[in-house]
Length: 131
Image (tube, rainbow, N blue to C red; front, side, top):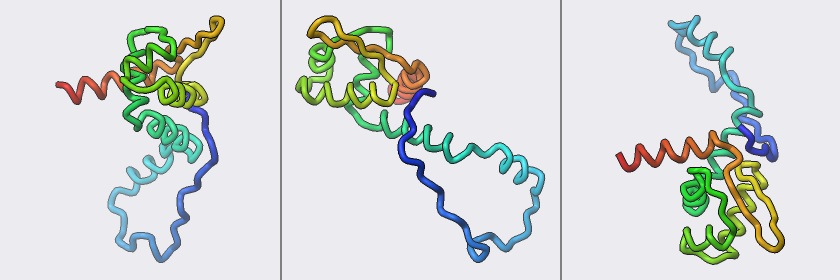
């Protein structure tokens, strides 16, 4: 995953008083789960990805670009039914998070999918919502 990790958020510390006092009957399972638990950095990267695609306009952008299209900002704005300014804002956010590729051709700016995992995630979610 290529989502840029911003400020690191720490999970709250658990005090001894907050821990479960019931004996654990599946100690091996719990130890395995603890060993497999992602790091805070990994969880933050996942959170950033989900946060980036949790916006309707950005989801629409991925839907427009998911089949390998390369679109200029104007085409994205038309596809979304929004202003060029709004489309540009969302495209820039996705580019900054390294989810989209960007190239200039004179005065034209073109965007395409960089993070194919994110595009596939959106496509699969769309299949589930439709099907």
